[in-house]
Length: 145
Image 1: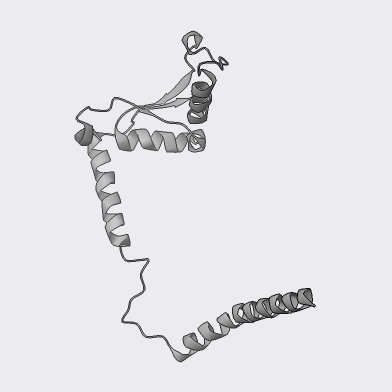
Image 2 (image 1 turned 180 degrees about the vertical axis):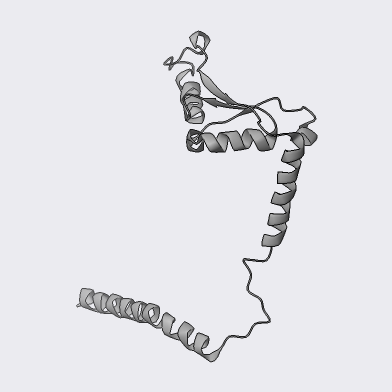
């Protein structure tokens, strides 16, 4: 993000359910190398939307000028930059190793037993579809009589 926007990040503000996990918050601080700030009210996105709607002209439920800051927890990085670089390199290597896992190897042939199993596993769906169509046709026939 520092490269994309040209402004170095000094802290990461987080919210949502995952922020309840202190381990994840510390891990983020360690891997990002900047403090991670968690508000005590973790659903701040929803609160912000409610505040914006409530402060609209004519609604007046929220007075944003009289609001006070909410307390927060701050997680500071606890690993060195060298350790962070090592972990990032390992993560990239793991990602590289995972490429192609979701695809079947097209060179592998299906055995006769696997072919039979695939055919047999499609029979219940076929019976369901044929029975449903038959019942629909019977219902339409009875409705016309």
